[in-house]
Image (cartoon, rainbow, N blue to C red; front, side, top):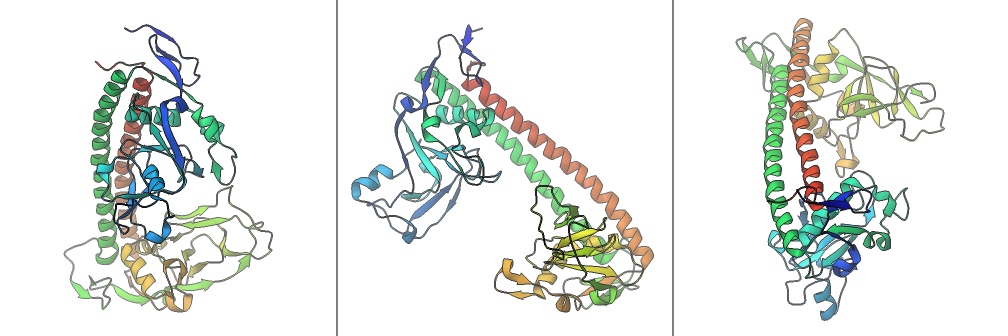
Length: 430
């Protein structure tokens, strides 16, 4: 058992007695910002973009055109070309998708190309007396365990890292030999953990595919596989049971187009998970009729048919944004059956096909178009049986998915703990 001492670094706590504190800036040979220009000896068309997309060394590579690069002199290009072991620090951004302070290590063997372009990043090149991979793991631990806002120049809107503060952080560490042992150990352990996570993620994807197939089979072919079938006449449906009908959406639903205020009716959001109460943080407007009325049992769908499947049957009286189409049932029906039907990928594609526009985000399916879409119409008793079956079956699948997601979270927590304990010397590589 090694003797320990107080590191005098709040988030680190105790470190081995022989370890010392160093400022990050004293471990860095060079650091530079901005966009990296073309290698003067390389192919101008052979370009790469490094996106700090994932904190676990999982960078994406994206080809960039030459005109996105600055022009540098030969000496500048050589200086700014990334080298093996360089650390890329996310220094600007905001929100959960682009948090500031993440660090990844560049490894040239991962990329095919002589040129690297990176936005909103600072490159930290570690000096030869220290091990880049160890410093990268340490900065991961810092990110996980420190309030990164302490290093921001502002905390609303675009967040910017104060590099002066960041480069003056203290790092508790041992000699290069022990840094190498710790980095090698963490490489092996993190790779093993990532492999377990990948296996579980593949299992989740299999369950999600199975769930989609169960839903599609039930809403288009019913629950009894032995009943006589007939051609529905619809390419996206195929055969349906002999006693089912085919009808147009306009024959089952009518348009509700009453404008109301979100001050009088609870604001709701139309999402891929259905119709949900709008988050308290969502912006409210002052207009008196800026929303559409939704009643419990109404079907709401985002009329910008971008294949995201944002739709559902509402469990609430409330209001939604004007971009949504609101439908109320004409006759008695089992709304849950149609809720399942409208969430199938096949229906999303059919809904999209009837729309018009330029690109997905500027693509709209109006009520005049939507009401002509043909869909299967089972007998009411079978609608209810299918809805009951899917409610129960999909709840079972969702529970399995939830358990596996919990396993991934446990592995991620363990990985973070492992990195912290070894880079701060609380555990020793043996």
